[in-house]
Image 1 (tube, rainbow, N blue to C red):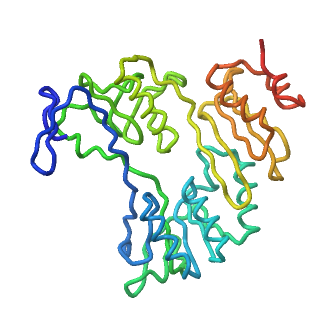
Image 2 (cartoon, helix red, strand yellow):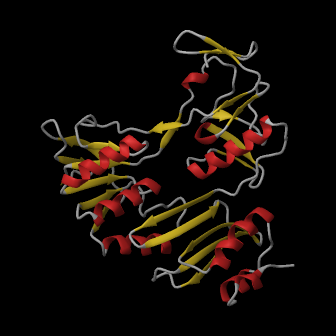
Image 3 (cartoon, rainbow, N blue to C red):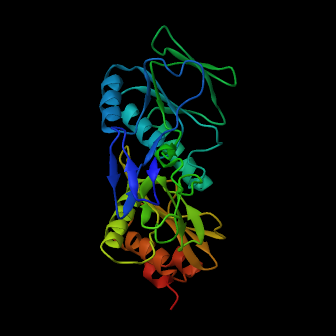
Length: 325
C-alpha cells in the first residue's frame, strides 16, 4: 500500500500517514505496452486516458497510414474512427480472426468484410517485430518479414492491473487483488473494485477480472452499499457495447463453455443476434441492430439462469416464446 493493514494506515508518497476504518482499493489498470525495438518512437500511441484521446485525435488529423496493433475492443473502435477520417488503416493481430475470444467465426467474417469494404486491411496471424523511423515512426516490420509504411501506430493489446501500491500490504494478489463474492480482500474491511479486482463470479462459478468501465461502475456502486452496511454478493452480467462505423452492438455474458450457439437474423447483414447456451441456459448474447425485446431478454435471462429452447429461440418470431416455464 505501503502501510499497515493491521493498524489501518496508508503511507502516502508525501510521507504522511492516513488512517482508515474501511478501504476500497480501486487502483485500476495501465496499458500493456509494446516490447519491440522502436517502441519509443514518436507516433506510437496508446488509448487509456482523456489525454491519450486528445493526443491521438491530433496525430490522426495529419496521419496518412496507420497500424492498429490488436483487434479487440480498443483496436476495432480506433480502426473504424481512423478509416472514417480517411487514414489508410491496417490491423495487425496474432489470431486468425478478429475478437476470437468472443465472436463466432461467422461474426468475425461479417465484421472483417464490413471493415474491408470501408478501407481497413488486415494482417492476421501476424506479430509486430520492430518499428523504424528517424525519431518518429515511418515503418513497421512484422515477424513474417513484411514491412508496412506507417506514420501512426495505435496499440491496443490489453491492460495490466495496478498492484504495486499493494505490495507488502498483506492483500492477496494474483492477476489483480483477489476478492471474494462480496468484493472483500483477505484483509478485514478492505475491498477492491474495478479493473484491479479479481473477483469470484457466482453467476458463472469462476474467477473473473473485467477490464471495462461498466464493471467498474457496478462494483463501485456495490462497494458504496457495502460501506453503508449492506452485505450481499456482487452479481453482475458482464457487458459491453460498441459503435463502429454505422453499426451498434451489445454483448452480455461469457460464451466460454457454451455447448450450443443460436443465430437470429442474417449474419451477412447488419442486423442479427447470437445466443450461447449451456445445458439449455443462456450464458451469453450478442445483438446488433435488433428489436428491444431481444436486448431486454438477453441480460434478464442470463441473470435469472433462464432455461431456453434453442429451437424456439432460432425459429420463433418473438424470443419470448423461447423461455421454458
